[in-house]
Image (cartoon, rainbow, N blue to C red; front, side, top):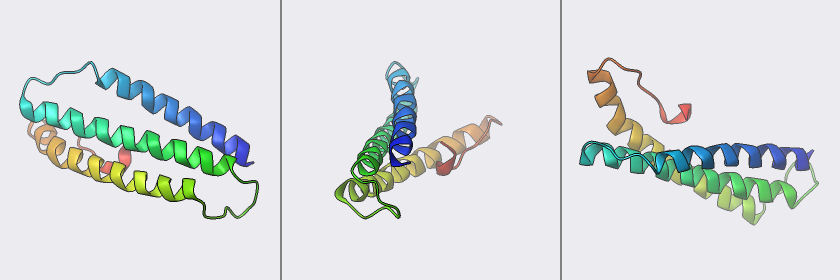
Length: 110
């Protein structure tokens, strides 16, 4: 149901919020790593915003298929901003991780 979907999305948003708070206590050893953390925080923040809009969109209707509404439109815009921040993070993080023989990522993996 739409109400169950909204609850699940809210749970995901809460988990992301917890991770975002943990990232807030990190300080990188260099300006470049601080920038990476900032980009990751921006991606998470926009993902949380998208989650909240999706949740609101599901709660605003009981119809199926889902109608377009302002909450879904706002969620899509937040998703785009989140994806861009994650892509920028990956573009900066992966060369560093690769040089240290560590795992590399794609924007869709987090």
